Amino acid sequence: MLRRIPFIQEGAPRIIGPLAIEVKAENTTRVEFYLDGELKYNDEESPYQWLLESSPGLHTIEVFAYNEYGNVSKDVVDIFVIL
Image (cartoon, rainbow, N blue to C red; front, side, top):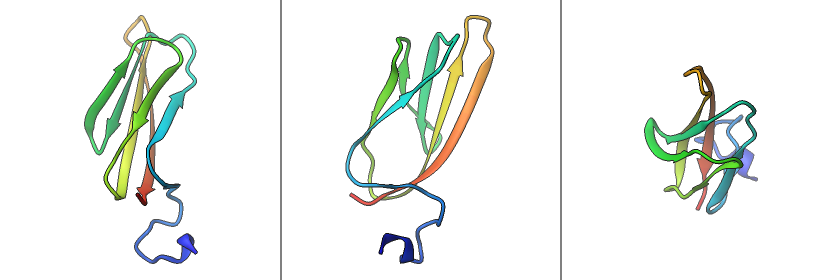
C-alpha cells in the first residue's frame, strides 16, 4: 500500500516514528550524523548511534566517519518519514 503513494521515492525506506540509527565502523574515532545537511549528532564512542526524530516527509541522512589520521568515509540514504 505505501509503495503506491505517488509522491514517495520508490527506493526510499519508509520510517514510522523515531528510529535508532547505528553505524558499524572500524578504525573510526568519530561519527557525525546529518539530517538534510544539518549536523544533528556527533558520537565519539562505539557503538556509533543516533536517535532519529524527524518531521514527516522525504529526508536525507548523511553519515561521516573519521579516523585518527583525518580520513573520512561518507554514506548517504534518502528516507521517507511517515509519522
